[in-house]
Image (cartoon, rainbow, N blue to C red; front, side, top):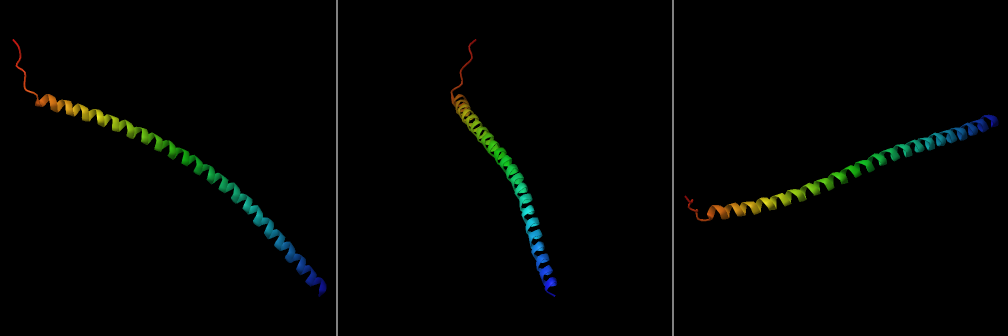
Length: 89
């Protein structure tokens, strides 16, 4: 009986050791997966920042174009409101 209990204890200990080893091995796998995911997130973050900078640049260009159009509109209105000149000849 004693040998059976002792063997059972050894088997339990080995079982716990095997489960712990497999569990730790799985953690290493997850660490690799998390590293890959973090790398992809960093790449996406860089792309998003680049797109945001491009959008900001495009927005500034559009604002400058709108200012030029406003200036042209003002000039056109002045010309339309001015008295007509009589052609020579």
